[in-house]
Structures are given as C-alpha cells and as structure tokens.
Length: 136
Image 1: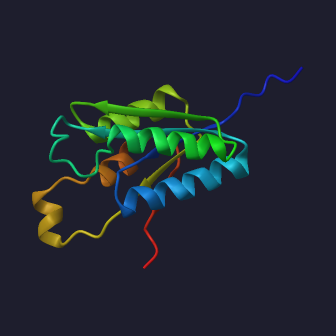
Image 2: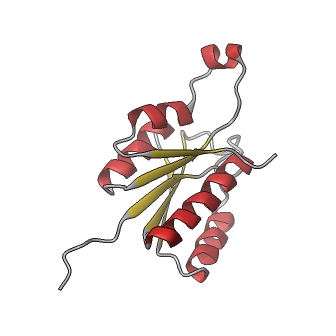
C-alpha cells in the first residue's frame, strides 16, 4: 500500500484572458502530474463591478468542463478581505505542489499606484509559482 498523496495544484483564476491562460496551464500541469486542481476565484466584495470575479453559471460550467476532462477539481468562489492573501492561504492549506497565476503588464505608474495580486502571490506563496501570460 502506497503512502504517497496526490499532489495539488492551485490556480488563481480570474474571468479574463489572464485567468484563462493560467487555468489552461494549471490543468495541463495537473494532467501531467496526476494532481488535483484547486481553482481560486475570489473578490474583495465589489463583485458587481469586479469583472474578474466569475459569474455563478461560469463557475459551474468551468467545473463541469474540467471534471469532464478527467480532472479532480475543487473550485473556491469566494468573497474575501484580500485576494492575494486568500490565494496564498489556499495554497498553504492544500500543501500545494505548485501555484499558477496569470500575469499582466503594468506601467511603472501602475506599479506604484496599484498593488498587484500576482506579484504578492509570487512573493508570498509557500510553494513554487508558475506565472503565465496569455498568448499574443
């Protein structure tokens, strides 16, 4: 009897091209590693104006698609105080083998004025992080 556990891959998912790129890569990694996939789609509570927070029907379709592809999937669709902290917390709780995050280009001024969820996740994650950009 094997005492090995199934690895877990966590993906920070946003309902945009960056989140879809991260999800595609995370699903590929999960298939390759025989891992379960935990999808984190979170918002700070401004969901009505947060276009990156997926609609409930999109979350259901996403989960059905991934399970239909043979993946073991857990989707966390939550309102949280801080999105980066929530993603890192899930990766910590799940003892993630890998965390996948989509990254977007920010201007120098944008880097000063706006915090980057991806940057904080990359710096604070308890495991290796794979940052993904959508294809051009």
